[in-house]
Image (cartoon, rainbow, N blue to C red; front, side):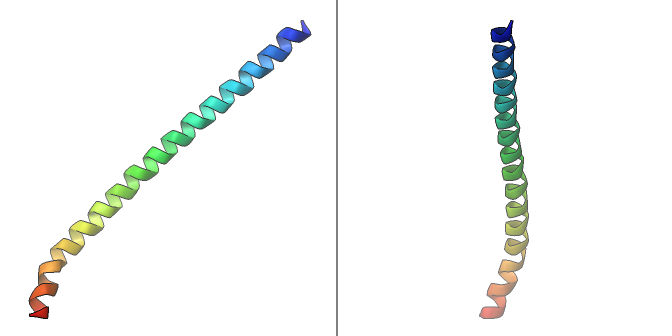
Length: 58
């Protein structure tokens, strides 16, 4: 009975670990998506302003 309890504990802790890792991965992916969205937005804005900057330089 004790052995089963220990096995159950191991299983649950292992499951919690894998779930935690998966949620970490999801968080990381979400962060990357948000980051790329922000980066593309910033790039788009700077590209819109870029020709104006070039025209002012010349």
